[in-house]
Image (cartoon, rainbow, N blue to C red):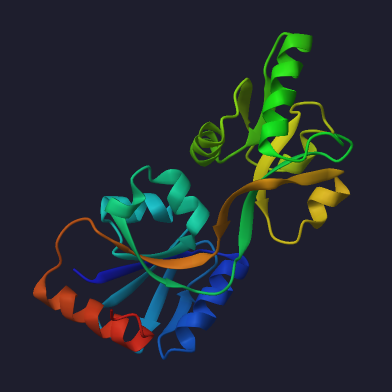
Length: 232
């Protein structure tokens, strides 16, 4: 067995992760074609690179099929209900920053806070006979956040892409989504509630708490963490 390191399989997250490890003397590289999802590690012994989608990495960490993984804080918190018991945060990598936020139409001039949204949702249900719809793919995080804020009379509708367009397309009245610059929100005439920050996210290196490691694997893990400067 070797220590398996899960890394996003494509795009800017993969490139930035490769750069972050490379700057610390651990070279990660893709082997074969872009469809093969295999890779190599040099600079430390006993570590295998596994290329996965960012959304798969939390599940693989929780199951112990990979021992280390780089993915967004938002994905770990959303996909692992008791994430602190399943993974350990080793390092925030300083890229991939984004905020999970609640946003409403910009023309809702009387809706600026979660309390306003709660009042609006009650009025919406009384008027239309169904609950105000909030489009998101972050169901668990948003539901917990709104419950703690006392917001009721809403329903979450699933949106796996182009969430900002759901309001314009009349499939939702508000959204909860990740944003980094806010430009797409503004382009779709949406505004973030003043107290609507659900979670601040960034690319993070996590360690699985599942399963035991052999003495050899513990040595490889210790050597890698020392090289990366996250030896605790």
